Picture 1: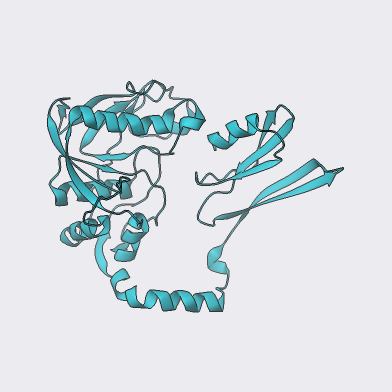
Picture 2: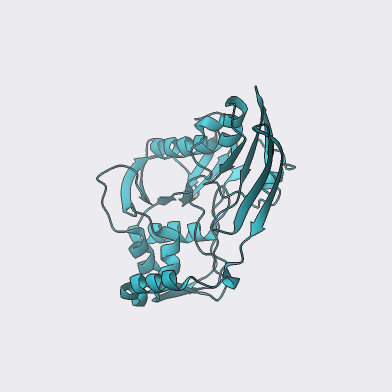
Length: 299
């Protein structure tokens, strides 16, 4: 939403911006002043949870006033469209048995949220490290997927909820400590660059096997410090085995992430005691509302 706010301050003649992608449920639009008036900027959440409704009162080709509200969508109370419901069942039919396979049961609360990690993300990096025999693992900072409560089965469909993209390939590469830090610094800048136009993602890459400290207010190359793998400081010149998935480079091939994690889940049978790998945050006051409930350590 920061990008929309900056654009609204620089571009005139736009009455309202209905943003998306960041999943922010904004109850009232932000009024942004620019050279020729005000632009309203808002977001209506994600996954069809809300419908954003804005009514304008227009006089002499100008917006005089507005009314905005978020309408919650109670999808479980809405009857399915018969034709669409039948079509979905037809398309799913050949895959129903595979999607319903029970891979494991979770004793933990599996969610995907937060700037640095979530328990679903932790499960993915844990699986990558064990199956691939890696020292560390990277997983992209996605926020979509179905949350599971303790006692819920982890079916193939719930796993696909978290991983179903068109570039699901897993990789195992040798990386020096210097390269690992460079990758993390680059992604961190996408998140914390002071200029919204240079921000290209809302979440930090999820890491497994790497402990680190982050200073969001520092500049690129200086945000990540005190990196450790297996309790030892990361050596810039040492080579480590790093697993990952969702490569953006063309021509990359590898076993899909859902097959790797499915192998891990079938072996474990029960997922419990997940240790969330989150960084220590420095350089931000404890009163910052964005990290008020953060458990990773703040100074």
